[in-house]
Length: 234
Image (cartoon, rainbow, N blue to C red; front, top):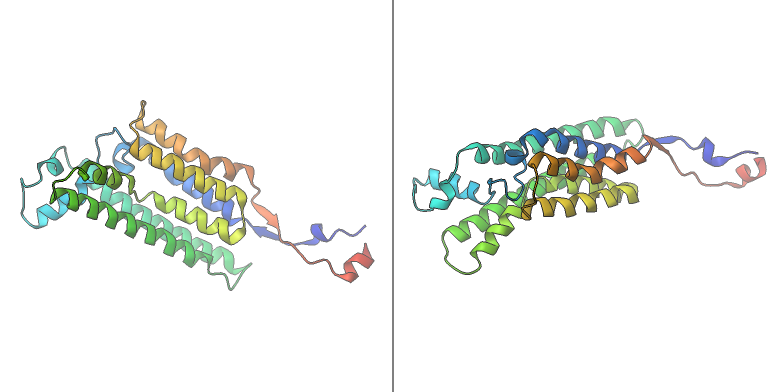
């Protein structure tokens, strides 16, 4: 009996690839989790970074003492994380463009992934800087909330954005669940000072992306329409 499904061409699963890459990037920074991701309780507060940098430029040393506490490791890590993740997703987008040409020449998935990741980084950086500066030049009961919100704004939300874009494009339920799971754990890691080493927290954060990547095949069957000729042949 003729089976139309078995004759359907296999299509590369970008959902699996994107979740795998997000998990790999997360696992790669586990040894430097405190400065690369800044989990709550690590002592590396994201909100102090833009205030410190802008105060340096304005020669306003000493005005915001809380922004100058600690060393430079967290500040360098904050900048490097943004730049590194931006370049990482640029490389992924270029790879997706090359990989998709053979199967979907008109696909703009790579461009949407790049726009989503870079756009997310721009928004989180702007929110971090805005909240930090507002708290630095203001004195109100909302300042602690603003600083806590600034710590929530992280360049690692770009991983969530990339997976969501691919999940929507490929109608992948597993990728969608991976994005939601990663986002929930990321919010917890950034705002709740959980006990345990920071590296372990980052490894746990990678699980929502790593597990679906292992569960889905590398390629999937392209759905094909059932024609009268196919039915007659069966």
